[in-house]
Figure 1 (cartoon, rainbow, N blue to C red):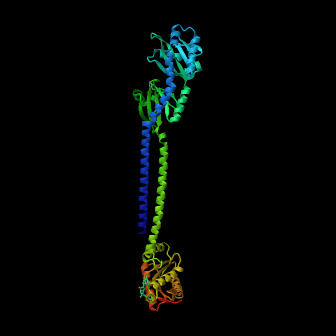
Figure 2: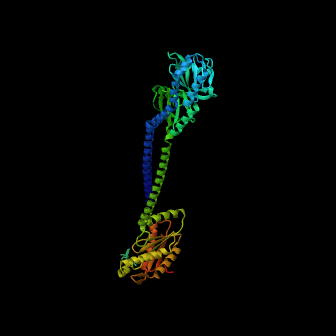
Figure 3: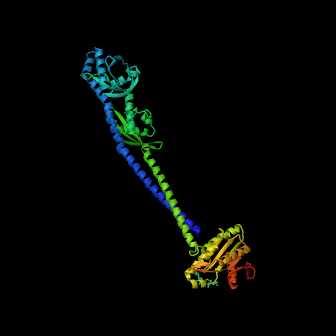
Length: 496
Ligand SMILES: Nc1nc2c(ncn2[C@@H]2O[C@H](COP(=O)(O)OP(=O)(O)OP(=O)(O)O)[C@@H](O)[C@H]2O)c(=O)[nH]1
């Protein structure tokens, strides 16, 4: 019965635990996935395009302007006339180039004449270009190219080989014949600083890719192979991206999803790549997810613990109510049956004598009749209290019937139990009970028996009952010890 109840409570706690955890987990995970989707949508739909357009407008300011300046130089009447007049006064050209450099805050400015192959800078003549010199390959490329200009990243000979972004603009005479290349140079460091600044401000990876799929400019933290096709995850997408010119893409690297926004910048003929590692963007909500799960777990544990506490208390109270006689506070017969089973199991493990005392208040009917039923109750309570008073922890005191009490004494043989019964009888007889302002003398008769291995506990009680009967018959206020099971039912009368 008890085991069934425990199982019931465990089942309830388990069901409650499952309900709470599944509820908490479901809502937390649902919230997480909704937020994740919202963040992804925001990255694809707003954040990256917005970052790209911000960068684009900054780039326009910082890189498109040099293109315009170079274009102005290529169309400058003075420059073209000076070349057509035979590149006479070098100082004039140097002053012009210097002026352009100073005015627009460029790192360097240049003009290369196709006719004389002289490379002019703001300082004067730098050198002559030659098709055999690998460092001059850019000039011959520009000379033969179809478009008006190119943006090229190269070391600058005129500035101690500092890595420089050159805008190389083709120059034509007034009849449209090619006469050289002009433009200005910006330090890559300056542009790189710009990209780093964007990256920090927008928390994205930013880099530029040329029409060949080569990474031409990137920030400090960007570790990329120069050839974008060699980038894990992204490689297979490169041709599609270059063809489509603009769009949103996603690729996986080591399980991390990367979201990419690409825009082609026609002025630079470069692609602007703005990239976001989704896992990093989700780090915040993932932290929130773990915190929520931990809170849910703690709340579940607290609820389960409190429920367990309340259930235990109620179960204890219910068990107590079900096993206790309300009037006397002694155990009832139902509790006796349970405890007796336990006692017998214990006895079989460690055998020890077990004695039973069955006590009955003498002429109780008279007390009831004379003093009233409530007074009778009071007497029952007082006798029960006297029985309990000398009880050991291991003893069992039961209200057996109306005015009958059963004491089960562990580790006590018949002789010892008879002595205890006699002490009890004397004590009760010598203790008047106050009822309705009057002292009532109460006596009890007690039958004593000792459990024998061959019998059932009920039979031991029966033998105590028989002894009690003998005590009553012999005049009440007596103790009678039962004979053994096999012996004739002649109880020994005891009067110590
Ligand atoms: N007040 C009160 N009386 C009870 C209770 N339970 C049983 N009784 C009464 O106890 C009385 C027992 O009477 P009997 O069985 O005749 O026994 P007795 O008068 O004690 O006589 P002997 O046992 O032969 O000495 C009955 O009148 C019952 O009504 C109870 O809880 N309260």
